[in-house]
Image 1 (tube, rainbow, N blue to C red):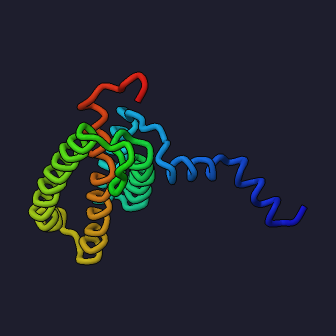
Image 2 (image 1 turned 90 degrees about the vertical axis):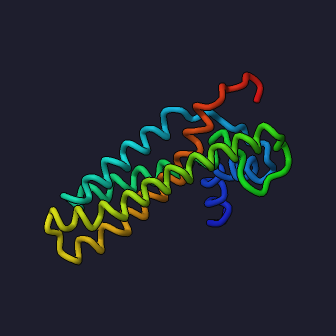
Length: 164
């Protein structure tokens, strides 16, 4: 057996190629994820708060929350954009409501951050380097919110169907 064949066998053992086939054909089962988005938000929020005082603890926590949140669009209850197979009015309304809620929360957090960052930098006597480092961390936190809140909203706004 050649090296590429062995690597293919090893990849098949992980189950990732089968998952890719399910996602590509649209036959993947969408799941209600109620507690995992909350865990990701808590970890990311504690991380962004910790970045202000201890960068070595805050940044890894922020990125762990974002890595968890990265998987929600793939497995969560909202069907992805651009898929028409199996999408009905209920799915479109659920997606619309979830993203309206998400963009409202992100806008409020971003506006609050626009005023809080300079104030915090002034009160805590941050130097320019720390403030410049905190801004991309804040952008990563906003991305985590974008990945997490739609799944969180859709999971708690609806009940799981038995045969979805």
